[in-house]
Amino acid sequence: MNNKSMDHARILVVLPHPDDEAYFVSGTLAMYIAAGAEVTYACLTLGEMGRNMGVPLIANRTTLPAIRQAELEASCKAIGIQDLRMLGFHDKMIEFEDPALLDQRMESLVKELAPSLVITFYPGYSVHPDHDATGAAVIRTMARLPAAERPVVHSVAFSNGHQQRIGAADAVIDVTPFITVKINSILAHRTQFQEDKVLGSLKPTDAAIRSKYGTERFWTYRFPECKEQPEEAALCCN
Amino acid sequence: MQLIQPQAIQTRIDDFVSEDLYIHLELTNGAYASHFDSSRAPGSVFISNAEIRYTNGSISGTGPYRVGLKTEKGWIYAEGLTHVDEQDNERLILAGHDSMGKLIVALQLSRSPF
Image (cartoon, rainbow over all chains, first blue to last red; front, side, top):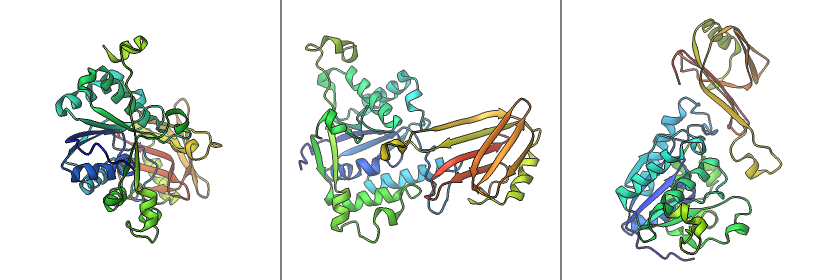
C-alpha cells in the first residue's frame, strides 16, 4: 500500500457514468477530501442507457436519466464531493462524439480549475467504450499541455489481462478507513446496486467487505517526452 | 413498471394508428457481456426518436410478448417484452427484462420526442 501524494488540494475527476465514481474512486476521493482537497467531478453522461432499472423495477428507459441524476447527487454527497458537473453527453455515444468538442470541454475544465491531480479511465484498458473514450479525451487534452503545467493523471484500468500490457498499478490506495463512505456511495446508486448483492448480510466494516472493496488502484499515466520521441511530438507538443 | 396485460397494450397500440410518432427501439445484452464471459458476443442496437407511422399493429404471444407494427413501407418488430410503464398514459413505454432485472429490449412510442 502506498497512500502517498496526499497533498493534492484540487482534484478533477472525469468519468462517463454515474456509479463509475462509486466503484472505482470513492474511497480515494473521501481520503483526499478528508485531507482538505476540493474535488470537481465531471460526469459526462447520466448513464441513461443503463440496463439496470432497480430490483424491483423502478425505472424505464424514459425515467432513468432523472433517477440516475438523483442517485449521482446522493453518491457525491456521501463522498463529500464539493463540485459536480454533469456535462450532458449521451450515454454509450462518447466514442462517437466530435473529439474536438470533448477536448474543448476537458480543456476548459482544466484551465478553470488548475487541478494538481486528474483521475480518469486508462484509455484502451477500461472495458466500456465510454470509459476508453473519456480517458482518451482527457489524455489528449493533457498531452497538449506543457509538461511543466500538466497535472498528474491517475487512471483506472480493469480490462481482462490489462496487467500484462501496462504492468501493476503504481498508486494503490488503502481505502479501508473510508469503507463506509465507499459503500454508501455505491448504494446511493440504488437502481444499479442492491444492498443484498453488495453487502449480503454483512456490515461495511466487516472483514470480507473491507477486503473486497478496500483497495483502489491507479496507474500514473506516462506521457511521452517530446524530445526523446519525435513521433509523439505531434501529439504532445501542438 | 408492471407486467404487461396484452389486452391493455393492444388498446394503446390501436390508439396510435396512423399518427406521426417518435420511436425508441433498443436491444442490448450489455456493454460488459464479453468482459464477464468471453464466450458471449456483444450485441446491441438502439434508434432514438426516429419518426414513424403505422397502419396497424398488434401484441402477440403468451409472455414475454412480441409486438409488430406495420408501417407504410416496412415493419417494426420487438420480441421479449415483459413490462409496461403503467403510469405513463401519453406514451407507450414497453420493456423486456431478464431474470436478473436487466433490460434486454425496449419499444417506446410517443407523439413528442423522447
